[in-house]
Image 1: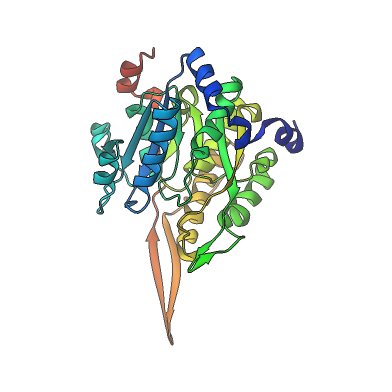
Image 2: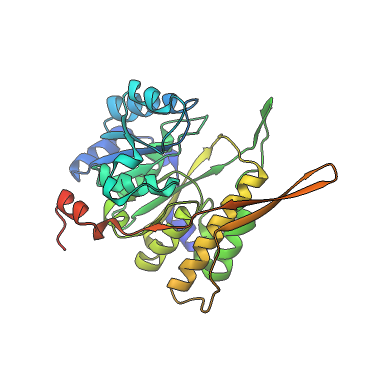
Length: 325
């Protein structure tokens, strides 16, 4: 299947799923349970609105989502209190599978959600969205409801750079265009058909999530796409246009850290797949520079690239979900 053929067949627009009554009927006919996971770290400004909207529209009015959970990395602000008061189930990441220790990173929360939540489908939505709308849920759930051969649905959208006092109409997705798309072009050309491979909104069948590893840091989205592509093929992937997403934009330095983490995870995955051989040991330190007048200072950032194993390998998980060894 060429990228253009895949785009024609497996790219959707959220408006195709406007009939939520029909979607709920089909979900119930298939006896599916759907969980929404909001991974958080200091998101007190936006978490309340997201929970209120998803709960009122996609749980109470249209019972599409059965469970809303916040998996928190240890916020120092009021994120957990607000989330609980607005009706979400709130968990500290370190309390889930505590015997396996605590690791820092968004991927850690996503991995532990696979154990903690009960859905046949898990929907991941970032908690910093300023223009939250029900389409961020039903738009990526829809393809899984109506197309059983699809297992993993990514969101894409325009990502304007929010700058004071208004919003600029272009930009965003910089790490995708500068790093990930060139890498996919070199090694996995079919994956370039995904317009926003790093988007934080995706819906996935449990049967896939439990069989793939989770890098704990920045590389989790990239590695997921590679693993799903290599195991289930492009037919298992889809994407939905959600129009526009406004969120907190990161500085160039922070994007450098993200790029470092993604590149390190990508190279490690290339080696484990046998595509690249003889790589030197990849160190965890990113070096950036800071200039103050005539003084130049090197700043070192240690960026972990550990990886959690597929959940299906954990005895606790197999017991909880009735999976055989």
